[in-house]
Image 1: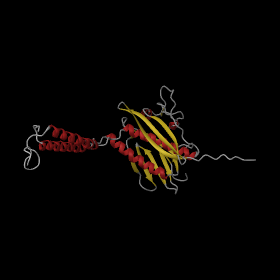
Image 2: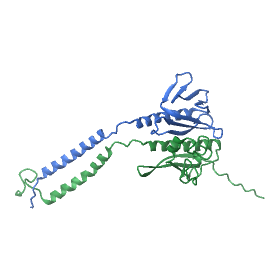
Image 3: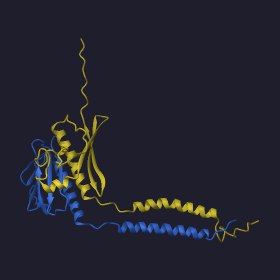
Image 4: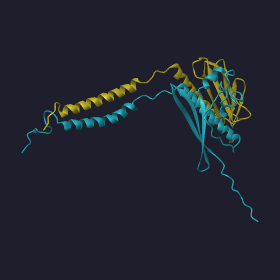
Length: 146
Length: 175
């Protein structure tokens, strides 16, 4: 029988070490590979929260009224919700509750609601930081009769 | 009678044969396949880029606009469109997507003079709508927002099912 240089036990031990090393490497990669949070990712997180809040409110709202810097949503039971853009900040106020600041550091922004599409509200926000992405999207008002 | 190559218990002592080496190499190769997937799965998920987030917001805008239009006119269904810009291009020969007309009160689409920051933020994106008739009087709408990032063309899409009215039967009035 032909004889080699290494024993089978040695090779199996080598296989075990290689697999252990690869597992340790993948665990290290997972633990150390998380990129640090930056100002941009923080802004996107804030945008996510704002988006979810607006979507939930517009889902309940039956009508909308837009002034120069405010959006007033009215639910089917007459409950008013106000989004206000003032001094570079976007706030939300529900009924008699105190206003809640959703976003700060804005350069400009506004709400769009037309008679042509009464069930649609658009919002656009431009951050003061010129490198930060703007926020623009629309929401259909799903409250009331559809 | 015992083979002289075999020790008193189990494995042969000393070196291994070429066949055994090949067998172990084969097992090692097989074990590398699941290891490759373990390493691949252990990679942290890529963070959502700013472009991808903006594209998702734009796709959401288009779908919500389609819903609001359908509310205003229930018989109207969105039609299929080609890839179109979402703001007015300097060349001017490409029509702005109908879902971005009017935008901020501009009937023909947003121009640079209207809102330069928003214009340049939205300029890299394009919009395309695909539609399909499905069974059970359903209508599928897929909104694609295209953009280019790090030299690669990417697309974000959102889809929605709409109900549509069944066609009215044609009645034949006999003599």
